[in-house]
Length: 508
Ligand code: HEM
Image 1 (spheres, rainbow, N blue to C red):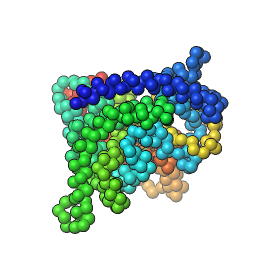
Image 2: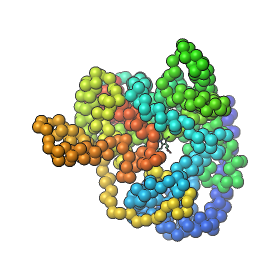
Image 3: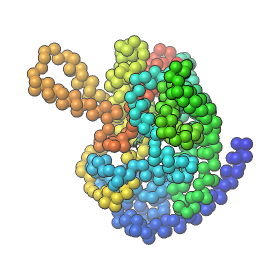
Image 4: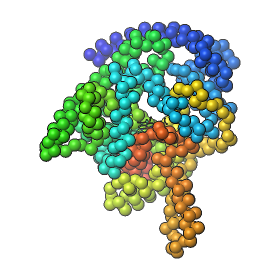
């Protein structure tokens, strides 16, 4: 059945590609002479070369060399237009504009619209796609419950990571084993995050892990292709392009549907009869079901809608975390002072784990300052996307194009934690300090707090900043720290080889 679908899909993709190329050319010509086209013509551009069909070629080149284009644009020290394969150009603002940009309201710069447009939600997330994005119960659950219940969730995440590492990285302590860092981190993160999103039954289902991943990846590619298609053709092209991701969705629904059905039945029963012998699991699916029941709108309880919400949580949470932790593992392992850093991290993990009785708790993870700052530095050094904090300009006066202030651009990976030194000095102070010393220390403590992994600022945008800053960052930080801490157990014949992942990984 899958093979038949593959052949049909391949033929369709061929036909669709030809139609696409023709329509893209017409679309680009039309855009060029519109008022929007005039706006873009007035901007300084990056990535354009003096060559035949310069604009079209820059768009195609942006697929592989957007980073170089951005570096080039950065040196202009002012806002510039960036060609973007699979869509309209972006106006990139200089770092000096970050503060003002982030303070703008959604009436000027809309955060949801850009996601709806980038993901082509109308065509990719099913008939209720826009409804899911505009009324994001799943994100409210995240904001209200997941972060608050983090101390209770640490154990669940660890419960999945520990067997997950054994399964994907093996248990051989004698020989070197090659491990592909990103695919295994993706698997581990999907499993651990879905324990918190969807519960233990769904998160351990290998089919769910595979098809939820393929669904998310497919969605991104389909959205990218659809952004190239003129609007009038989208209703015809989208059903063809989404054939494969719909198949992955149906498989996920097959797995999640019965679990969701049971949750709804049990939750309603428990609400009617509090002595009913069933304890609500501690996970986002349960909180989502409870929120949906509270709306008194029975359509919110459709298993397909709830599965889409779970998959949307997956879409924002999984690749972001997996890429960031893979970057951290590789950065720590490959930079100049890798050996000292690894030894320092190892010492910290051993000490804190001993102090917390051999169990990773939320407060033990909070105390792990070196883990925290190393991941933060890695996220600063190797960002997730070349462009962060995208917004759709909905008010023509919503953004001003301005010149950058002069900033240095540190291109070195330098993990270190200023907080640790400060705390050490604090502990060494025996005599009670004077009031002025107290104040100065209080200020230093406040300043240093801003260097924590989850504290966003206009100079650290890895999780965004302001009203729309990533609400999952505390959860992601906890998960990534647990992963690095777990890695320290990997030993080869008693010799520490923590984090030797990219080249060879020795496993327990
Ligand atoms: C290392 C991992 C992660 C990174 C680097 C990351 C980064 C980001 C960034 C840059 C934004 C956009 C902020 C903006 O536009 O101002 C964002 C938004 C968001 N993230 Fe994350 N994220 C991560 C993990 C997660 C996780 C684990 C979850 C869920 C548990 C999550 C849920 C969300 C949601 C719901 C939004 C939309 C917020 C809004 O529009 O108001 N993220 N994230």
